[in-house]
Image 1 (cartoon, helix red, strand yellow):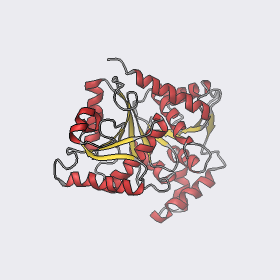
Image 2: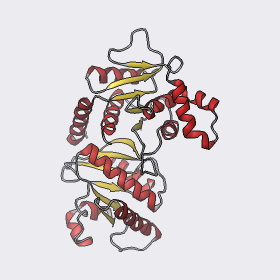
Image 3: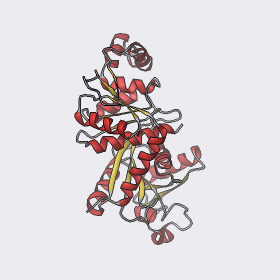
Image 4: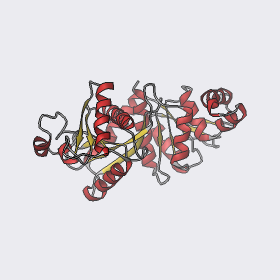
Amino acid sequence: MSLPESASEFMAGVVAKARTASRRIVFPESRDARVVEAARRLAADGVLRPILVGPPPDRPPEGVTFADPAQDRRLERYAALLYERRRHKGMTRVEAEATARQPLYFAALMVAAGDADGSVGGAASTTADTVRAAIHSIGVAPGSRLVSSFYVMALHDRGFGHRGLMAFGDCSVVVEPSPSGLAEIAMATASSARTLLGVEPAVALLSFSTKGSARHKQVDHVVEALRIVQARAPELHIDGELQADAALAPLVAQSKAPGSTVAGRANVLIFPNLAAGNIAYKMMERLCGAAAIGPFLQGLAHPANDLSRGASVEDIYHTAAVTAVQSVQP
C-alpha cells in the first residue's frame, strides 16, 4: 500500500516552514555518511543551516559547518554549563569536561548555550544515550516535569483528525505514566499538534472505559489526569475517559459521550501507557497503511530528536526539518 497523501503533504509543509525559519540544527554523528548526505541536501535546499560535530573533511559540503570538540574554543564554556547542571548529581569539573567532549553532549550543549537551535542524533547511537545527553544538557522546559514523545500519524482517510493527520502520545518513551505524567503528556502533545499540524488540538484521553462505563484504578488514573489538565490548562480542548471508538466516530460519540466537544472529532490521542500506544500505532501502520512520522521528543527546554539507527537519509532530512519547526515556538 502506498503512503497516504497526507504524509507527503505534511512533510512538504514542514520543510516549507523550516526553510522560512532558517534555523541552525546540529548533528553529533559527522562520521555517518547518511548524516553527511542529509546535511548536504538540507543546506543545498536551503531548509536549514546544518552543523556537524567533528573535524571537517578535506572537502566539506557547501553550506555545512563543522564544530570539532577537540579544537573548539567553546568547550570550556560548555563544560562549565554541564557542570552547573550536573554537579548536584556528583559530577566533577574534570568529568564535565570529558563528557562535554563527547559528540552527543557537545551537540546538546551547543543547543543549551544558544549556539544551535536544535539537535538531531541517534543514527549511530542508542536512544538511551541520545535522550540522556539531551536531558542532562538541555533539560526540561520551564513548567514541564517530564520528557515524552509523540508521533504524527498520517491516514488514508482524511475524515479522521486534521485532514488525515493526528498526534499520538506517548508511544515510545514513558512506560507507565502517573496521572500527573499523563497530564504532562497530554498538554505537551497538544502543543506539538498545534505547532506541527497547525490545528487547534482536540485531545482525547483514551481508556477501555467511556465516562464511567467501567470501574478500575487504570480508569481512575485517566480521570485524574483530566482533572489535572483542566486545572493547569483550562483553555485546552480535552475530554476523557474515552474509548477509541467514542473518540473517533461521531455516531458512537453521540451514544457513548453525548455533549462532549471532543468525542467523535479528536485529533490528538493520549494513550494510558506505553503498551497501548506502541501497539496502536504499529497496528495502524500494518493494518491500515498509516504512516507513523516520528517519534519526536517533547518537554525539553529546546528541541532535540532521536533517530532510529536504521534511519535513511530522507528520515534524517525530515527529522531535522521537524526539529527546526519545533525550535521556532517559544
